[in-house]
Length: 330
Image (tube, helix red, strand yellow):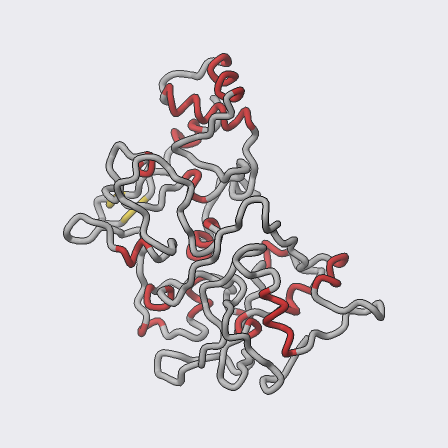
């Protein structure tokens, strides 16, 4: 699948498949909104990478062997899934001229086409054909690794972007001197700033990429009490009913079996610790990424908000065993 720079042709209207979220606001501002998946219309794409039986999803297998992919077809092939509907899109654009400035550099082995970015500039598609690899442990986003460096987060971005030209930004520090949210901090993750007057969840956050992917790109070494991590696990109806019961009774009172059964029968969803619509645990199920004060105290979106500690460092309250009790019975 290796191609030369002169063979590559870039589609100027699409975006790269997922790479690490950029750590500097100046970089992330080039992001574009990924269209939402219309319910019942566009089924999600099945991930063909690292699956021997899925080679035909990308390769011509008519001879029994995976044929190389023509250079001119690479980007359109990626976009056939990573269109923001069937699979998530990447905020970094293709078809952009790579600038020659002090702030920008590029490893020589990362290909361009006539000086422009393409999917395989940052992503080594052949990595997904290595069946000996483990997708989560090694490099699930097929990112190139220069000199054995990490294939995630800020360090990955620094392969091209000079750190001194793009100072680090903590998007969780959201409040300006006037006490209102800084729109640029909101649009680090959202395609448009949420309404700070919201009291109940709308489930229309308009993220630029899948929510947990945004979080894990900046927090790839998140510590979790479970070896396999909570992220991606699916809560049962009983577990969700228990969470709803705790929301109404508080931690000081053990929910009764009758209360849990009633909430389960009503298919009530948790309002404070929110899983995805199918019950999958997300980063925000436990962690509220917003700074306290962005939403009114009575808003559901204010529950568990981050605050400044004695060292003026913004921290999440999800640190004590009491948080576990909101989902796990004693």
